[in-house]
Amino acid sequence: MRLNQDEPVVHSDVIYISNQMSTFSPNLGEQTYKTLKQMEIKLDRHHSNKYNIIKVNIYVPNLDYWSSMKDCYQNFFGSAQPNNSIIPTYDEQAPISFEMVAKKMTYANC
Image (cartoon, one colour):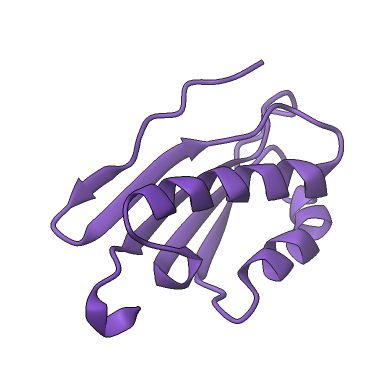
């Protein structure tokens, strides 16, 4: 199942990415990694990277999912670790979903 995933919206030097999700998988680490990689590809196409991410919203079916995702999320971002919010959707059938706000790279922050 592939869900609608819009292209990022770019306004000035800010990139907005929403509705990023992977196909549903019982392995939350795998689901998290695939989704973050999708976002990274979109950032790259818009001249940015994970080090320019300002904010991430993470939508999870249940708050208990965060403990299963946390290591993968933290490993992916390494030293970047953007501000984030964990938001429960209370829909156990839904995959995890991400939204993020990032800055476009400039020569000053390359």
